[in-house]
Length: 227
Image 1 (cartoon, one colour):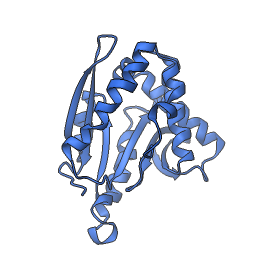
Image 2: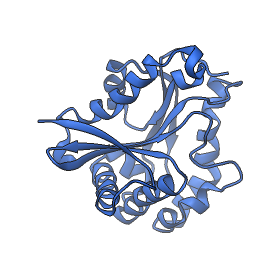
Image 3: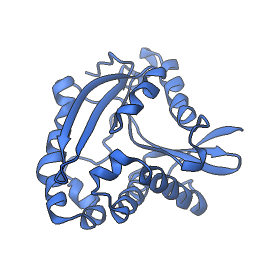
Image 4: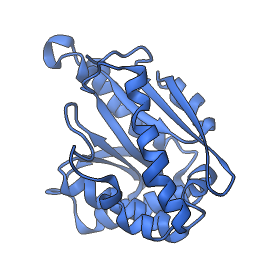
């Protein structure tokens, strides 16, 4: 099996690739129990969320890395370049993800806006209080269920890890020599660790449903300092 990585933007992605990227994210998270618990086990919310991620990323000029697996898109990663925010200051996250929130029970929607997002946003500040966040940021990565277990996630992440590792301080400064991401699945920690990431902070939340949800912040390298 051959896995090749192609980087696209809103200006270069084809309609077929755009549709495939949405399908991969939607399907990959539909089978993720931690993610579905967070989104009240709503398939409609999951679809709206992940389709919004793709459309917003492309409209904002962020990169999509597409993993071609035997001629089909089997994985996708959204990359935000150093110095940029996925959602810029002054834009409400609730407005960006309005369609996903609308598919949730009212109590769950209010929980996102009033409790979860404000607390999660402060987690990095607690770990790196003076950071300017000059790193590559990975807001979403997904592998289609059909392609899981075939090295697709490793190929998507490994390509950026290799790029970052090869960047010298003189070429791009310290920020471009780091990667930051979140994961909600404790089982992913070992996977990321094999690629050189380290766990920097963790929160455990009690959702309105009574279920527990983990939010974990990781960086590559594990001791990255971006200031």
